[in-house]
Image (cartoon, rainbow over the protein chains, first blue to last red):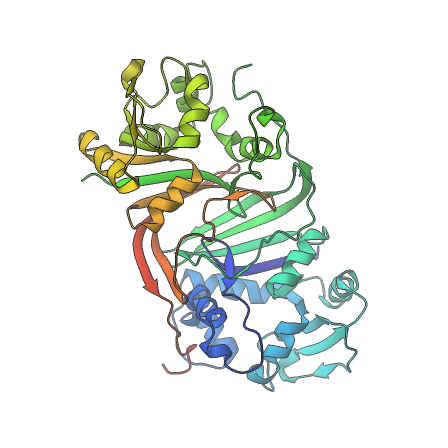
Length: 227
Length: 227
């Protein structure tokens, strides 16, 4: 069965990047980039990631295996417009996805075909439509929400996410863009319940995979007095 | 060697309670309480916690073992004033600490002796002094920062914390009081680095223990192109 999944590298305090860099130039010098580089540093030496980027070398370790598994599980992607715009040049002629990518945007644009199986289809009628189109294109594999964080959060808030894997990096950043920010539209005394299904522990990062159960009221208990 | 430790139950998005309830009455009906009950629910059935509260029964499982280990490792406690005030009545004549507790406060007050080895000493000259007094009283065991979250964060920000254990509960709350909030006083492109030293995985909660390395600049890497 096709699941809708997302995975993201976050700091211990939940940030996937520093405070948003405004304006075009100078991103590499921004605090946004410095924090993004820190929380994704564990990926760089992994053989499975390097192979997708066209780089040689790297370590085939548990982190590499998790990246490979993530790539292989995805039959199609859903992506935010900002991430798609930012990646278009650096990803080049043969982007690392090797699958159809559905970009949520307000600006219509013709589908962009790339080498190696990647295509970018621009969806202007909302996230539910983008997820449905990706499911139809996934060939029985999963639909992976590639990011950014805002899109992951929107898809979680809309009840469309089945599985969330966090790569928790042991650093506290204090500020920046949070994956699980306040705009989830939760009611007072309401939460989104999940079940942890797998935890993989390495010195550089803790991988925690959750299946999403859904919204539920927060209820009190008797603090153990009654039983 | 005496370490300064803290442990706290938090939601997946980092909250240890809901939005702060203002005013005296009605705490149990507040959103603060509803979220606090949710993130600490895993504790209630643990035999080691029940025993300290004077309750019978409970499960002796891995969660109970972690609570027992936490109690046994602490030779003294440091506590915030709000937590001490809130607990004074419910903890009663024989509080569950069974060790000296140093309360950080602005209001001088005579030391309160309780049964079972617990005492409350009110420290008015700051967190560093409270930690030093607790170290001297810990008899070679650890100093545990009992909470609340604001005090844990102040002690982390001051560079006084050696070890942090998070009990990560699989629920997203969206709002409330965050343990790792923005007032850590971190510079631009600066983080607090930690090392995960132990991860224990259960269906109800993921226990992650970190040793705190300290502040470090966030530096860029070459994204794998150069080696």
